[in-house]
Amino acid sequence: MSIGKYEDLNDMQIDVLKEVGNIGSGNATTALSSMVGKMIDIQVPQVEVLDFNDAIEAVGGPEKVIAGILIRINGDIDGMIMFLFEQNLISLIVETFFGTKPQDIFSLNEAELSALNEMGNIMAGSYVNAISQLAGMTIDVEVPVMTIDMLGAIMSVPAVEMGEMGDKLLFIDNNMVIDSTSIQSKMLLLPTIDSLDHLLGKLGVA
Amino acid sequence: MGQKLIVGISDWKVGKGDDILVTYALGSCIGTCLYDRTTGISGLSHIMLPDSTSIIDGHTTRMKFADTALPDMLDRMRAMGANTAAIKAKIAGGAVMFQTSNSKFNIGQRNIEAVKAALAKLRIPIIAEDTGLNYGRTMTFWAENGAVEISSTIMGKKMI
Image 1: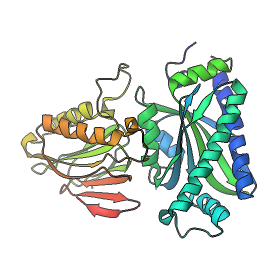
Image 2 (image 1 turned 90 degrees about the vertical axis):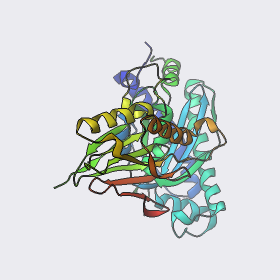
Image 3 (image 1 turned 45 degrees about the vertical axis):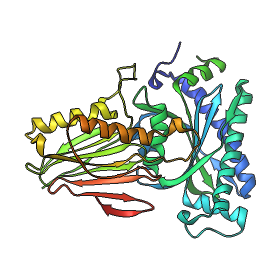
């Protein structure tokens, strides 16, 4: 059966997507954890199919200020990976690379920004490698792009690109928890509807 | 007592009197305020995409597109008694949130052009705008006097 709309997914397909998120984000988190030298846990992934406004509420609300690192993926899955890093995670990453915490997230210099981009690159690569191996797929990862701004404005980017044909977004959502304090930073995988069909076919639940 | 009307993404609302209309975190989307100073009837739209005509699937809201949302909102304002000839527009948004070499994804500029074209077709003049660049904007619109505030995380607040 072919999926025409995100809301057509059945429970079994949703469970399979959760597992995809689990494996991908587990691998990405391991990469982050070893870079920053901290214990990082991930919470059980959620598969969300929500209209745009509810999707933004679900990841923190429109005016929450956050760093968004966007990585487009293509090949056997088309879509994007979006990392949403809270200020304390940004501080931690910058401190790991440069030894000092940044004053605030709006005054990051070029080197600090590129370190964060590189972290996004490594994590996206890890995420995608894990999924590729799971389903024998080829997925290419584009260069990450980052911005620090209101969450609603950041999430409008996937909404525009994925939401042209409908009014909903599908994303697999993982929360990261660092040192038992909840740094509610997130990893989102947002496949296009066409590649979702392809992915589910590869995983034998189309 | 006026209401605070929250306009979501792909949405529009109409108010009057001392209502306040707000739309949060415009990225590449465009917020359009239409204000009739003679009646105070005011509309705020938040569009995501320029053009509905390329969308094959009809199962999506007309409030998402510049070419359908703005005429629909104007119709509602007229039905409430707005005086079309007195209506003026203020627009904001159309940013490029992520700088990328791939211009296919730079929808902000196309949205700005589409909103301007839709307003020109409706013969509504644009009297103020804060568009383009690379940051998100929240738009707050007071129906009692047509004032519009733009707030952003890096630029602070300003009135347009």
